[in-house]
Image 1 (cartoon, rainbow, N blue to C red):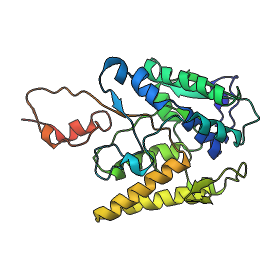
Image 2: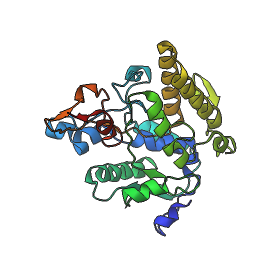
Image 3: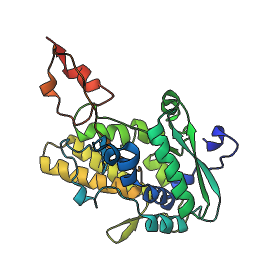
Length: 291
């Protein structure tokens, strides 16, 4: 689908983010620390509304990946952003891209507007990103294979149970809700001709196609989900996380901290071990009982 459905001012090609250097330029440009401290408000209010995220497995869950093993948490790198943009397929074209946000989400709208300003700077004005506000229900409806007009959208996900297979099954693995909605298929990547000679994934001094890397991601996720050996699971999920980062599938903003309120007669809270409320309260619904 074309971004033009959001208005005549948008000219983002449907294959704009199929180009890996383009995705990496956007990811490198985001000010993650500034968002956490000043927009989400950790430093501004002296509390923790959210923490850095280094992949699809929430910190605190089994087999979560230590940040130092994947190069640390995401950080803004303007030199890398400029470098990736300069070798991208769209470096010489002026492209206007929508960033889709939920209406009245002033926090993430502010983050998107700052991101747009930085993207304009690192691209010499060739990237114009504009916030478009549409309802959450429409965002979910548009997240459909071969029908998604959103090149960039703010999304969130929580694990329904504290295991990496659930998080991967929502966000990353082929056939999952967000992966399917973003057209992440091994066949899609395989049929995608490189937009430039730079449209390759660099790993350990070698280059690979996006199809190869996405296939390896899925293989590791399947191995991790089905193995009963803790060491095998940890290695598989670590490998998958590194590959997801290298493939530039997401800009990982933060892991939320949330407040819980419950009645004195609610029992079973001690069974809740997940650091996040999966599915906006599903774990509370499943595990907390009335005495």
